[in-house]
Length: 92
Picture 1: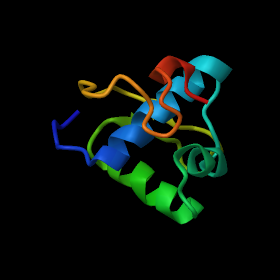
Picture 2 (picture 1 turned 90 degrees about the horizontal axis):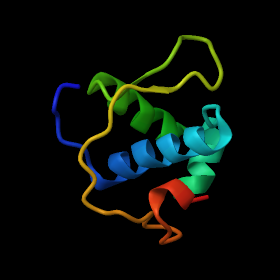
Picture 3 (picture 1 turned 135 degrees about the horizontal axis):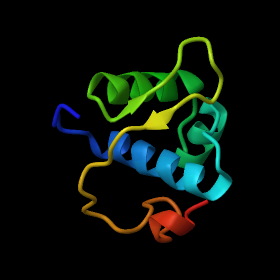
Picture 4 (picture 1 turned 90 degrees about the vertical axis):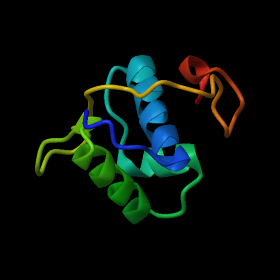
């Protein structure tokens, strides 16, 4: 990780992906991420994923669906999902 600061939305995305992978044993699709974060478009998710990859928090394989791999998580200031208010590990 480069230590670059994350926006709150990018941190939400990273923690949401991590919780999804722990719960389901596989990476989510961009549509699932968009729905989970309340984002209207998959293009917004693609931009967030690209920025998280540039900053060293995750990696993805080219031309491979659901290939997001978390490389590290920043310190988490908020212990609950801002959307459903459940602990991150229980967020749906």
